[in-house]
Length: 180
Image (tube, rainbow, N blue to C red):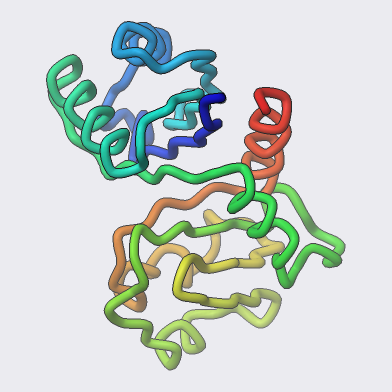
């Protein structure tokens, strides 16, 4: 039986940049042999089934997007088991503010640099974070738009990363569970 994958694109349909039609993406992925392709909101979240290996899928999806849409965003392929682990290990899961107050930054590979002093200097009193080799959890109850840490995270952490709020991560887990 084919495996369920969650594919996160970095920087898609954000601020009017890197336009990618989810409807068209679904079509080209189905034509390329992936099955049960489903998208969630327009910011580059796709779930599907495939028998192909992770590296093969990543290259194939990258080629499909580049050929069909003229851009090659970073692609993060995640399994349901990994997403469940991310949620179970969330150090802020019991905090009062959930949903959009909590974000997960997924890393493609372990960061080459994590400047904790810079993160700490940018962190508001109400904020908290935890960084691992795979991701960063950010608790920002005042909102990510007001977070100086979130705004400058690329200066403090050198890694290819993409972020999703907790509501999105939980919805993707539910959608992947339904496909399993």
